[in-house]
Image 1 (cartoon, one colour):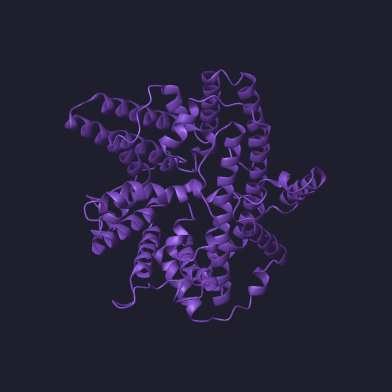
Image 2 (cartoon, rainbow, N blue to C red):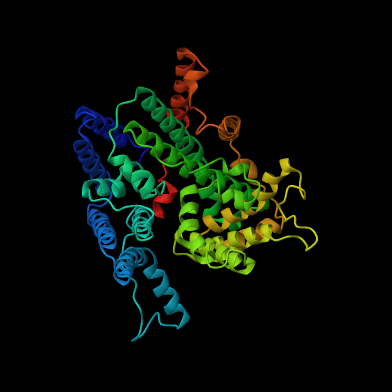
Length: 476
């Protein structure tokens, strides 16, 4: 079930009606409705995957209780490593097994013959990377005594399976989301209005910006050898805005939907195209994923020697490489992560021993130009992210830097779409200190003006939505 579908438009109000009808004092009943709705929402893709998410939930639930209940550190480690092994094992099997088997067979020329390796015919469960990281961090935090494990299985199942953020995040920490299932949630009319406004903004970014951009990007990347330098560059820049509108739009819909039920999810994007460096970009883009890898990969690597520049650079390189590989079992994603790590290390390195300012320090470039300079490597990263293989990356980069004429560029430019893109960027920049542009409209505009704005966005969504596309991050 997609957020931008009519089925979700029916599912959400029905679930809301049942949820609030039982009364805010009946927390267990509300949680039970949420769990049933979440499993129904997830099971529509493939009911068999429900068994996997339930199994992962139970493994981490009981592992955390066993860790807390044991005073023997070796046993605690055993329970922790069992949880991690299960989570990473499931992730490896469904997402990475075929990649490693194919690469191993290619390396040793074992695709055919008596010793040939065969791939598994497995479907990647939707949202696997997201809820696996969420449950795994729970047991790690319990082991490190950052949080106490919950004894309430229903609450924990809801924490893992909460449908607004189940299939594409935000990746929530147990310390932030899990306690919310134990608290009374009262119906707050203003919070519901705020949630609906954020859903509307998310749908606009997804359906008007991302889906229209996808039409152009897909056309160019389907046969990059037929396009010139400017056309390929234009499509690569558009892909950045496509994936931003797609994923940040999903996050807005998820956060807005959660508000309708009285829950608060973490902010996942903060206008990344205003980033002044690659480091700043990753503090603005997919914020919860960056936070996860920082807490559970980067810090554990550097904690023994915080002052070691070499150790810190190794940690950055390794962490960003894993972030790239997290996105998919493809060398393009690996190179994407390595490239990001290299850029972060480069921009943090001092230009000389005498001058401590780094490559992207504000004393090197005027502050207003920093987003422009950081957008260049981000665009190159988009090529790595979007391409099907390394060969395609080489083709696109070679054609871009060969300055091949782009006779068909005018056919790709849709002035109406560029106007919508400008509206999105302008509104987000102007309202950059708010959670999203439509927030708190009731404080600045009277009711007739507010409804005019709402109807304008509704009209744009129905009239100018692009060809329907799945959310990009569902494949991760």
